[in-house]
Image (cartoon, rainbow, N blue to C red; front, side, top):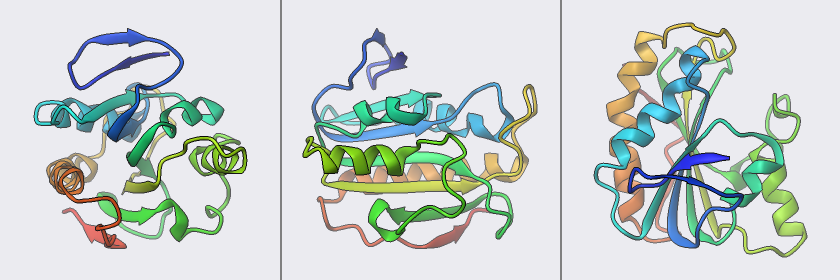
Length: 181
């Protein structure tokens, strides 16, 4: 695993550091709209306080378990393709808002499954998990450009992350949907 912390220094390892708040930006730079996570992480690192760890990773499956541990609040930034809203729509929800993700994870084992395993095993999983997901159009074509509506959502998403970092654990009431552009 290679990830970049909020200091901008690459570090190798299998577990994220213990911290108050972790912003976990998921995505793959090679896959069109899926590169959103890396773009957001780059911006958020510029203003993240010392108690916030900002990570960006293309990892999936049980690799996400490491990122969900030893943190009070986990803010996850990712893309989603539901087909039920225009590209650039921002969804905000807690992990507990969904009983099971619609259609399961395209990664077979995803964030929700990793969190369930951590909690079942009584591991120190995040007390609060907030997901900010942007409706995308294409997250599977190598070399595809990011959709303009997804790009337009980035400033709104960055502001949302900043606001959520400032709030206390349990103080956030997610907006279910927000149109970016």
